[in-house]
Length: 280
Image (cartoon, rainbow, N blue to C red; front, side, top):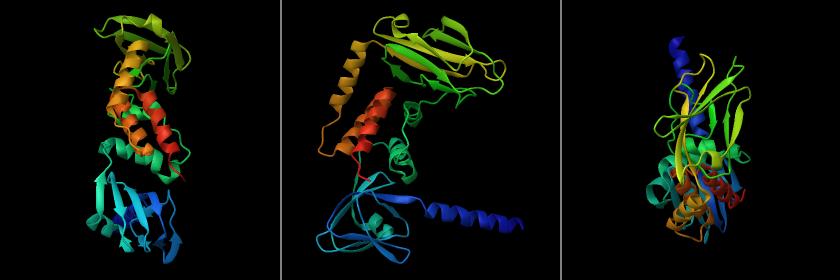
């Protein structure tokens, strides 16, 4: 019985893996189709290609695919192509996006079920490695770990902790000196940036306590930035990304540049723009 359960589990895992899309039809010219489950269907921009599919291109047709391995794949010759054929013999070029960030984009922009799902800045913080400390990986929301904040109002948000009636929010400066220690009944509190900013850039560490349910290790670091400094840094990052005719790739590269440097809100905005260039 135990061996039977293991066999069934392996088969289910294989079946699930077979359903994962491997490629996204990025651009298409001419007459191209996909053979799936013994049925031939015309391809259009935005379609997904799966492992068991066969691509069929007629004369003068061409496909540009974006695959899960972070590569663009060009098919310009007529014929039939399985996904292994595509991987082995065709022209492939990298997107220029890091693997970790690209897979985040794939899951949240290109994955079929995510078409209408927004991408919050907190998810972007996690995608670039803004790891939260301690025992509360899903409790703190904003400011997320590693974030740079330039808004006039800074909102601290967290998820409700089961059984908690009040929360203790502690704010410390870069040398560990306590700046604020308040008791809050709700799951958010807002502060004016001018009361936190010391100079152009100020680093803070905030932690949340809820009785014995959250320890002092439940914390995030974030940086408060003046408007002039924020404008200067964002412009510098924008200038480093080469403008291309491919709007999707350009916005994607801008998003990654912002995310890698802590500008998670701006990264989310550029991801939204990138998604807006894709035709479904």
